[in-house]
Length: 480
Image (cartoon, rainbow, N blue to C red):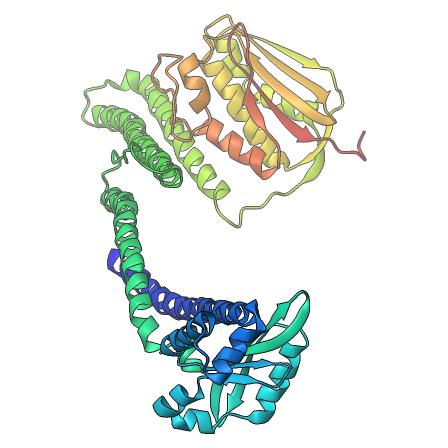
């Protein structure tokens, strides 16, 4: 992954280097042209200034007089020609002309021969009108630049200075710009590339650590965690999410192991008892007169096995994707009465009191009656199991927020604070009863799953004594 990313980064850097080189070349070339044209214009202004100092200076140049200004003007013309290879002409309104055509003819006769009189005449007319010009034209198939500046005295245009030069003298050769620009851009982008390389590598370190941790996790090392120190905020969020996932996987694995251990124990205990008692009766260890007593024990243990298997099958059916509800209208109070009758024997054995506070009677609801009965049975069974002899169980039906609310409360030892957040986890068993046969921790998980299928909730209430669970069911609007 790292090599692919770096290849992509280097490819992008190369493309940017070429693009920036081209853009830089044209930008510098344009700036160079503008700067050299500005230099030619300044030279033209200097010549115009000299020509305008006095009329005798121009006459001295034109007629070869030994005048200081004339000599300086000639020197200036030669300097411009040497620097720009320019054809210079100075014309006054009297029609007198000074030029360096002789120099241009010696060095570049083809250029002099290609000069277009019409274009020069048009430019001269503009300058004599008091305008400064800078135009690009085509002369003899070659691009040329013409700069024109008027020379004036007391606001009156006395004449014009024209400087005419080839484009290459202004623009310069293109190849002379490409190499330095490319070198600068390459060095700049190279430095950027090195910086990006180290940045990407530092960024990839936590990703490689994440890859290794994910591999360890897939191999069953659920204790794997990523360090959050020195990570960027985005990477820290990813690492934190991974650690949370690992913690949940580890918790689920521990729950699974605990479940397997609990189920193994729950299965082994009754099977051992059944096998031992049956074998004892068969080989005569248990006398015939005691057979009835031990057969009752075998029956109880068989019931325990049946309950365990039923819970496992119920949870498996509820978690199937095609699990559906069969909703209908029924009276919740009547269902509670039937459930109480089922547990009457256990209530009498533990000498427990049971109060039914039906604040909404009849309580017509619209839900799956078989599933809701399963919730009631599990809650009542837990309440009886974890409440000592002589205790009390209270059942309440009422209307809350437009729904039927059912509360099952006992006077037992309650749920320890450390277990409250996990009470609905599958396979989790609380030790609040401190008794054997406490179950596999599937009952409340089944209840929660059933309520979620109905789009409703079940929760553990805060109570001063015992434990209280409340679940809600939609009211049947037609049955009210």
